[in-house]
Length: 135
Image (cartoon, rainbow, N blue to C red; front, side, top):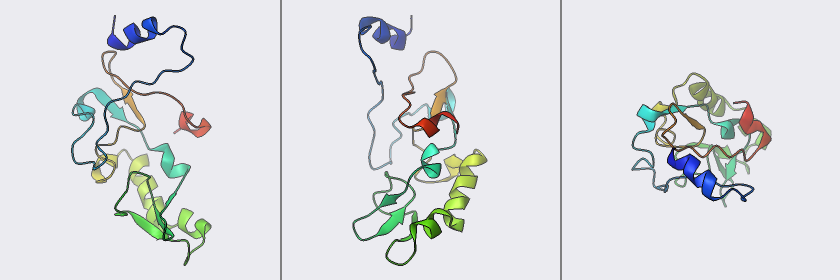
């Protein structure tokens, strides 16, 4: 029995349970050191669902981009639609669609939207948004 199945067995009465690893918010050390060995990285559904807006109106591609390295624009200067349809954001979407997300600094250690390639590895597969199913 895998550890994940053991946890499911122990908490049969739970409606939902989430197993995840400690996440390094500075993104310097991978939360999943075996990310490239035991997981398949899928395109990030967040790129099709949401934007992150800072206090000053700056917009970035991901809520984990604390330092605004992937700035897309500012809502005081551009509409959300312009930012959403921008060449820069579309280029990020294309990188993910072409399975190149490892080439993006903010995405290379991210464990969102991954699937396990074997039964002995943990993945948080909880669907948090209806669109998470299809990307």
